[in-house]
Length: 292
Length: 297
Image (cartoon, rainbow over all chains, first blue to last red; front, side, top):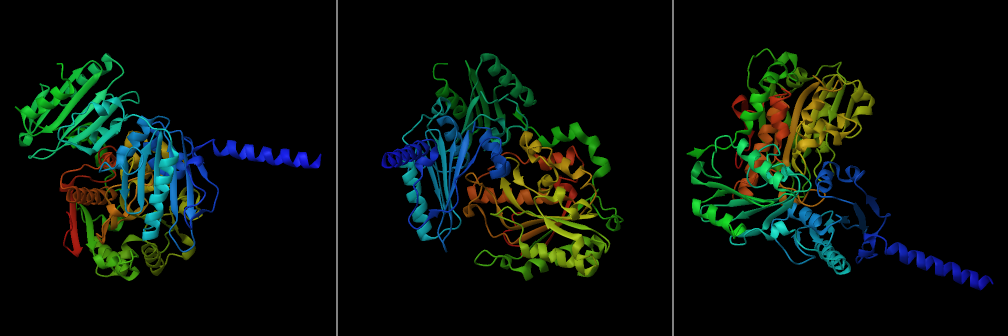
């Protein structure tokens, strides 16, 4: 009787442990990384307390539809700690968007896109955005953060598609590492200052991307916005030209001989900023809207 | 017709000119107001040796830099006179610092300010150095004077972390100031615990952060040894100079204009809507001391 009760008790514990380890993103994390071990319980933050963790930086994650972050610190006496965060962004598009906010060169070493810096590996995969950083850099910690990133990448089975609006950007001349996907108006100014306010009426339901293009005369930029309705596109179109008080045409020459151009079809609106010449501006729009 | 770009400054100023007049120099000590100089003086002092090879701050050098800067700023003939023009022996002093782990206000600088305050007669128990928790701190609650000191860095939501932004801890709910990429941060400077009390603003530009990555918005790759301090009475003017240096560094690093994003509009709004100081470079007198190379401004 005693033996069967003990057997039942330990079986129950094993099942509960297995269920628990399958529950959240902690299942993607190894129990240790070389000499580095977790020394404190994992921490979790949700939208209502993310500010406690990353202060003002929380707004960025909330603007993309954030569900939860798991934070685990691996430590080893005498060596820099390694901090791992797995952000559950609900949808792959959100994870991709967060990733695009800071990466500057498109890398493919980890996940579905990654950025590797001294002391940091940042990547996205499926609905997750992952950050692995060390307190400071040593050859050993650099090796370990890469091993951790590879392990997490391997354990995340999910994958996801880039948002369709991103795929609509013309590829000719595009710096892939410059592409940013967003659904909040403040990011429209990333490469070229357009306006202070929300002139296009970009809301959380508006899928936007921005890309930088190379030309011998310098960079130019394309902003694509996919709105949920034709009325919103029309409002965005009118809002922009109202803001650009000096401009009367969707194709205008700017100071310095650069060109701005815009066009809208259906739910989509495209703007080209600082194109090196008139033809480039028009050709870029024609690539986005080939049937027009 | 060649179109002109929208002037953000013009738009904002047109809508809020009336706000500028009354409170422009609300933080300037009365003893220093007599000059009638309508330009805000900002002192930039640099010495690259202030950052040691291991990244530590040289306490002697940074405090010499601060001393030279306050002498220049006040126009007084000695360090003691300069600090006496800024603080009074009967003041209760809150030193609002910034302890963000990856780029904090150097402790050596905090302690240097404390020493100067005690040298002119402020009691040790009447001095507090704090970042979080200032609204409940007994010294800050009865403070008659504030010194605002923090490093400059890019910020994921406000564009840059500034002297203006450093007072966000005087609100119990910082997130309430986050809308519109923190445009109204200057509002905190008009809270009763703060208004009119700031005697000196010190923007630490030793190793500024000009671009942020990842959830903690930091990587050493995007810092550099600028070895500078920006010191002034007008926080908006000091921030304006600081952000121009950050922007210039981004231009140098990326090889093209790369606007700080989100745009740090709270600096301009602090001028045009709140009248806290000036963000107009034409109204700022920049005085350069020390190392001049690669000043980026």
